[in-house]
Length: 152
Image 1 (cartoon, helix red, strand yellow):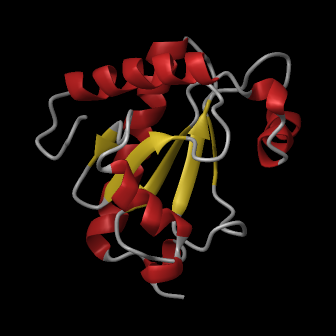
Image 2 (image 1 turned 45 degrees about the vertical axis):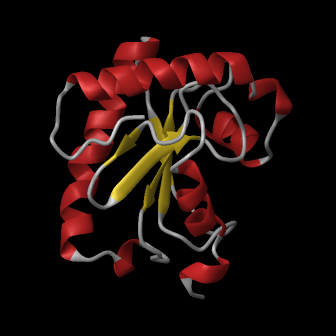
Image 3 (image 1 turned 120 degrees about the vertical axis):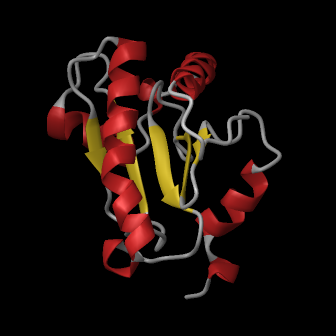
């Protein structure tokens, strides 16, 4: 598959003008609200070029990923107060390198929460709160004043 038919490649172009658009954009990665379910503080971390898995990352993308996930996890913790920040990446629904990251919510934890996200459980969605938290996360990430950030 090329980037031409990839949902996340198309989404990456659209996010350039979308609101809230990118919460953070580095040289190789973009961070936005969760694309399929507006669960508060859940974000998508995706490569800006089309890759279909971690094995396809070039060295610059790979070098940036670990520190980026740590930075995002810390920002989610500060903004939400959550003691846990989950990450997962399956790639089954969309063959483009992406990692989803965020805190558990309600009384769902661990596998039960991830299952709810995967099933797009509407009880986890709260668009107004998700947008507010996204703005808070964008501000938190911008406060680090990293030169590669492109804040919207």
